[in-house]
Length: 210
Image (tube, rainbow, N blue to C red):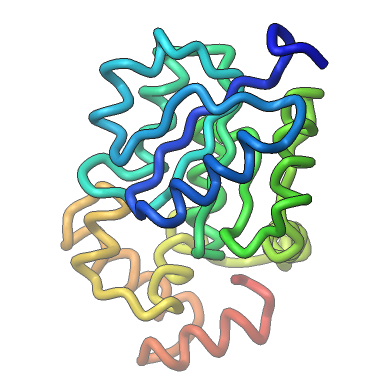
């Protein structure tokens, strides 16, 4: 593979050690070229189009605009760009938001160097690489009971509750007001015939609603 046909990679990652580690690993692998690295989405949006990457490795937890929220902006700027999410998080809702926003794949940061470069090649071939942990979460979601009394939004709220998030944080992450979240929780309790968050989580998991 010549330099002209190398897979061009950009990286957005605020942790310097991780960012430089990825850049070093990818740059020394035949068939790849690291064209740019950035510490934030805001910084990348100013220049990344001129870098012309084929694939972007995008961290989820970033200062300012998060990786998940950056996806639509990056796809609008570069419609043909393949974006691989790299994260330490294995949250159902986060995964679905990322994939729904245009991510081509979703890998955890403990992915081995060999699998990371294989994923870069796979996404260029039209694949949707996922680490084993992420794939299990996605499969589990398809195995949920089809007869759940909860709406999709109520399920999202309950999944957030199950991770220990406060009502305010849930409201912020779902882009709704606090009263809406409280209303969803009230409906969840009513539908599951419970009176506490612990009982709601237990009932939902026992019945495979989440």
